[in-house]
Image (tube, rainbow over the protein chains, first blue to last red):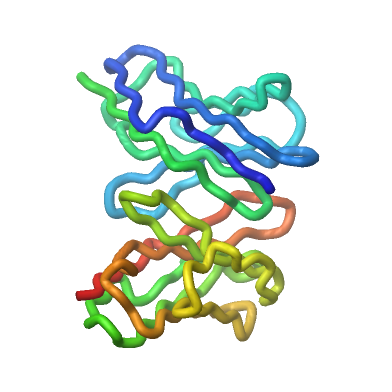
Length: 109
Length: 113
């Protein structure tokens, strides 16, 4: 069965610092990986995806993610965090769109 | 397209009552997913359809839960009878061919008292 794991419930960073939100995956075959963000009282919004191709994927709002096959990871990154990036982040694996437990990112001024 | 539309946005019902949640996917999308989100259990995949056919319902918690997709533009999730532990936010999402991103509805916040 396909699955993703997010090992951190919470990530705290200072504004302006780089951020990383971790995700590892377990799939048979080629992985289809996604990152979503959820703001309070809202549905999930798509950030980026990896289907095939370049291991570094760029997405919305300055986020990017690096696909690493040897480590079965797909970590979300941003070079300089903003307070407005504070939200709940989810990693997912397709095509049946199973989500990780989520990581709450807090960016402090 | 107006996106994925869920109704109602909020539902408060008494224990034992039947609850029906509705979802209209994005036109042309052939996958539809139902999720339940709670603080304790996170975002759980309940069931998903492909071309209106249920593919995996292993996440449906009990027989009290049922989902249908009578046509490509409509799906329902029914809970009968409802219990307080069913209180959660229920999301619907749709996905098109080529594994474009899944689009989520705004969710239905269900409270069973």
